[in-house]
Image (cartoon, rainbow, N blue to C red):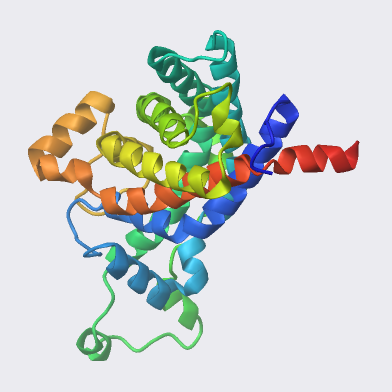
Length: 325
């Protein structure tokens, strides 16, 4: 299986889709913690990744760690399929006599990152709203026992429910999508597209060349060697390259997350664009704010791309197409 060559575009798309589903399922809770930590501005609800996950489980249950996962799992298949397949296609087009120079690897990564934005932006837009809902709910004041026991007018016997403020309904991906389409049109789903592009293109330009070179270590450079890498080598190369690229573009991810968050907590800034967001974060929170969630992001991206590249080069797509054919 390690010698199987990934060739056809349908096989690439199937491999990328399966890889994305497996990877996201494994690391989604850490991605949720990353989003909530990056959005903290004033009130510090969470002290770190573990504290965030512990409080999420305590207040929202285990499945609270997977809020927004349905959107991610639905759209990550085309997103990862486009990203991995586009990189392969660009690499093949830019190769000459089986050799691809470094500038070609970087250009192929740039093309892959640009192509995926068409799916990544609405996916991230919806996912962030669902992931951040728990953080906003945790900021709402809860009456203390003393406040609850304070003297006041007797509760109404006719309509007791009206006297108690009900918690706001949990947002849903469908509800958010419909509201955005009604109020802002299709552009509403692509809010933050520029910031997403600004994050994903540099990420792919770092990740793919680094992965390709790590994936060929210890082996003769003949032909398309990355398609013949052993599973564990592809896995470790994906983990390493993913973590390096993830940390490198974390400041851009913070900006993207802030711009795409529609509901803000008390005292939290809203932004008019990338430059305004960068300036406000720098002036109000300092340079360290641009690295919020860096550890979480590395812990998400490393196994995500390790699994993705491992599954991708196992040749699942070829097997599926063989069974169907």
